[in-house]
Amino acid sequence: MNKDLKAAADAVLSGTVGTGPGIPGVVAMATDRETTIYEGAAGLRCLGQPQAMTTDTVFALFSCTKAVTSTAALQLVEEGLLDLDAPASRYVPEIAQIQVLDGFDAAGKPVLRAPKRDITTRMLLLHTSGFGYSFFNEKIRDFEVATGLPMIITATKAALMAPLAFEPGERWHYGIGIDWAGLVIESLRGKRLGDVMAERIFAPLGMKDTAFAPRPDMEARLATIHHRLDDGSLIADPTLRLPNPPEVDLGGAGLHGTVGDYMRFIRLWLGDGRGEFGRVLKPETIDMAVKNGLGDLKVTALSTAIPALTHDAEFFPGMSKSWALGFMLNDEAAPTGRSANSLAWAGLANLYYWIDRKQGLGGFWATQILPFADPASVGGYLAFEGAAYASLARARAA
Image (cartoon, rainbow, N blue to C red; front, side):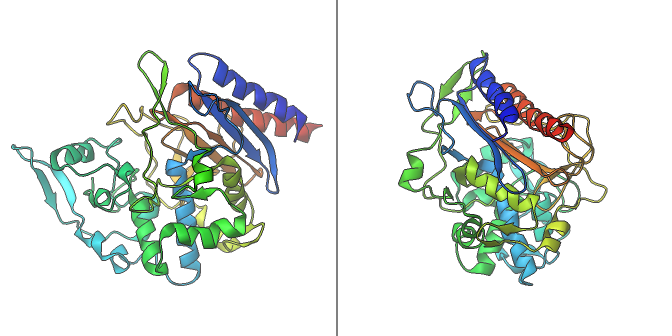
């Protein structure tokens, strides 16, 4: 491990945990194309409990799941089994039942209509399908309240039957589309998404501690989700858990895993698609998938509709951002040192990662705090990323 990077990154982790308002605990790692170059942990898995945060701690990954599901979809494209531009209803007929929510009538009843065009799997992967999240979309939030539709974190099939917030293909809007892409994968493979990933992604990458339904030994290492209160204090909520086992393997939000496992996944995308124990994607598939898929559309800031779950959120405010097949792209170089057109995204409980293919550097910052875009968590993450790039710059200059 680079001593320069270790000293700088350790200071970021300990400072973020120990300086008010602070965070309970964090695991962070950085990797080049070949191996993990930094790993560290600070703080506790759960406030009020003695277990220290360790590098083998298991996290609810939430939307960091999306890139893994997108990878499983791209494997189907390689095999000629999935046409990204065909109606997704070809593979999952239930999606044809989904309607557009135009609003509510005077009695508060939802006003629904059929969409004007079919939803494709490409739209699902690019977040242009019209699906939203209730915590980022007031219309979907109000629909859940009016109808009793369960929230997506229940991991139920019923939760996927939310209406569209807008016409498919009309704009970028973050939502449950990749959960539906998971159902497309299950239909084509004839098995649950978790089994598909275990066989075709986790095994060749050597990801032994990642699953939708954590094993008992993973449960024993699971970090607890905390809530940030209005006064800045934190309380642990051991009851806030994704179901184990889930009714549906949520391709957009359902995985649990270690940061070390996710490093192996990041190296897949830093490289040419090969893992330690076998190939996952072809190099030409990687090259295709990392390009902007939105055309003239752009990734927009996310406005909260449920403040208990998320703040308003935007990565690098004011910077132009696009979306590839599974990841956000920063169209310009970032102030941390991240190259333009790098890949990145996050998970609801303040997990963040980046993949810089140009400079061969990636990293992951894992906490378990709500609401999303917690200032202390985001600040620590950006400082960690900046420390990784500063160390790389010093190494190149030496």
